Image (cartoon, rainbow, N blue to C red; front, side, top):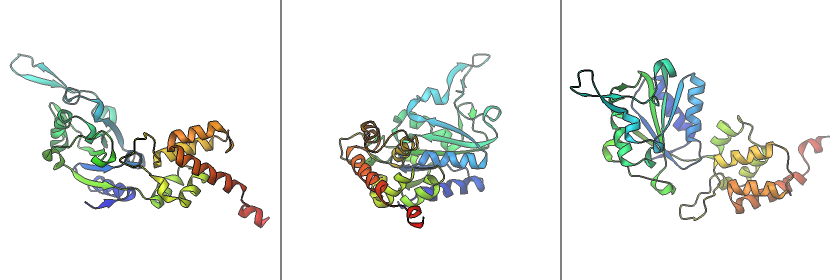
Length: 264
């Protein structure tokens, strides 16, 4: 399978929406690379509704609803859960974002079969103007991974999503005020954007998500680069080695003469 960047994944999802193609899309990629964020950006930009359904948190009964007898008690009906899109509540057009699909138990994945393929589940019918996008991690991403049955996988258009520093800067960092020290450091050391190692025993690794968190810390302007609390907070987001390297870079860069100084 070819690996695409997050910008290409965004265009793929928008293509389906713009052309009213209802086949569900599944995006697979490492944690923290912006998969969820880009879907939310699409919904905001197009003025669409968005339901974020984290499949790992639900059971098959939560999805399908509760069985109850009909009026003359001759057959069973299903009472749908309010977690699924409803036109009156959520609007005529939107994206049903199914998160953590590859982490959900097989029984929950199986309950999603009918919703993904037939756009209905028990008595519930997905509104015509809603599109299904599912996200998940790959087996080698070292997260909770449950192999999807082939019949479920075959119901999706599947894409493998990688990470790209230039795309992240253009589509996210500059637009969201990511701190200049973070951008400069990643320009200096591009491999630090996402340094997850599958066999590592550490729970902490750098990713676009954690660099966003570091940026928020720096943007608060309450620390200097020698402050222990600043170091501990950055270390808690990107790990000790990356934290030390980043702070050394920031101290050195802070001491350099700026272009404005030279011009003045």
